[in-house]
Length: 385
Ligand SMILES: [Zn+2]
Image (cartoon, rainbow, N blue to C red):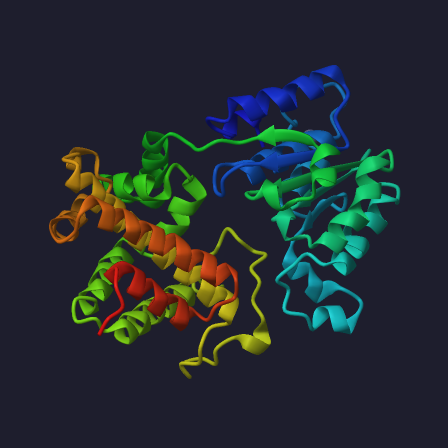
């Protein structure tokens, strides 16, 4: 793994290189920035460098890539590289923890998989590296429990907290970590990568790059989920609105989200790069039985559908102000024109706010159908008679 494989993140890389050159690698890093822009790749590259057995390397050089340690890191088998994620609860010794749903990185997980091993000598290397995915999912109790380890880290531990929502971490956690900020990637780069890695057509690559807002990992995931086709379906759900049929709109959007959630499930090939997915066998829909997907997955999929809806309204806004040349979704030109033609600028703006409100409702545990119905009311701008 080479630092140069982490593209367009010069600021982050220079922070990492400076620390390596000085020989004083912090004990705790906070890799923060949008989802899908290379944070985990950078974390693994750093881990690989810290664990590499070649002691003749220049301080800021890449890991050698050939030694036993490098090979173990590459195959995800190094005993001193601990990747922490919610799915680990299934390996916890306590059956009560194993039985949990796993929305959070609970204090039990953090104690068992981070705090305790961080206090032990490395198994084979010079140090232990902990890569904590979705660090913001540590609940308050877990974050508080981790403070001491961050404050007085056992000598050989390096903790890399990775998050797209650093604001959800306690200030006391953030202040104990060296911040490494990651930014959005240039859309042209994202489009190029989509074409070379996934064989996407130029037009679709440009659309996905624009839709994802410069988040390559997200764009690749959306390509696998066939999100561009989902934009069509989201647009069609709007057809129920003029008749004021709030319930039908909600039902269609929830059905669409259910479809997206099913496609995103592990084993469908859609999440190959996310081996830690949070599947609950007990909640898995029986094959062909048409059972509902777990609620948290449905919510995530519905948020994606809402993001697509927001994208349609943003396109409509661009059309409205005469800027259709910079639209991301030329395939949706007709839909955007229709939306723009039937509404004032204020109304389009209010519609975008209604979509954000619906996202917040989902975060606040409002049921998907109800959130969609309220969204419909917001989009209509008045209560249907
Ligand atoms: Zn090596």
